[in-house]
Length: 342
Image (cartoon, helix red, strand yellow):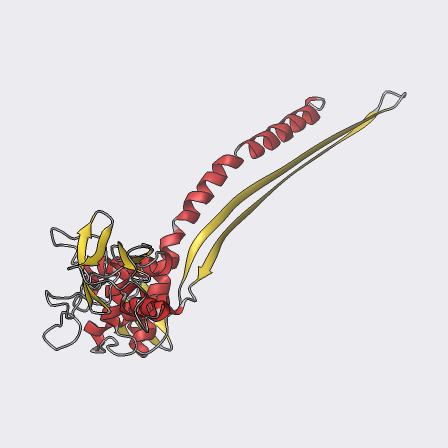
């Protein structure tokens, strides 16, 4: 029994080191999955703290940072040492040394939002979210939240009627052009129209918080505490969080582009036909329909490449360039009339 003792100890040490290193991937998988569950917690906690900030002061500036990349690492280090010393006298000494070490590292890289246009959208979203609970309306002047939402989701600050005038709501302000997700023709994504909801969170002080906060989302700012109850509250919190992430990460929508080709005679001499063709892209439907060039009326013709401006009727063409005709001034006039120049 005495002889087998060192051998058994050595065997156990080897097995410990082998199993300790072999289960590294298991621990790594567990840590990675647990770390990934914190992404939504990071985003929602920021949204809740910002909600508390806007309850405290509806004119505040939001703070938000989103997760861009992360890392999870588990490193196991095992060591085993054996030494034997034999003497001629028949006696000997031996020693056994074993060690194991595990290190785990988890990290996220956060990107703070510093673009003022994105912060404007977030500010409007938080103002709209708290307006049903605190009677603090969203900004209508600087910035105009309705126009900012319209531009982000549709590419235009306002929609127009048949006469090209902005569509107004019942109060005389610019109406929302953002499609409602529940409409048949809408894309159905979460947008600013989803933020119109009855009060869905509670407001109070620290002593008013529920006893069990482990499963209750809550946020605070300057002594103001808010918390969200399961059901309708968590649903609205999810919508607001998705909208804030949309403003933080995605680019605004662009209005449908249209190519417009304008052709006009340079010097008015038919014997030497020289024409300049201008092509520009317009992102609005309010582009020019007619042009006036030295008494020659031009009209817009819809073609495969867009609108081509051609004379409506032939006019007498002098043998020499018109007196006082300035091509640079004419080109500047076209650029002024062009919606692309706006």
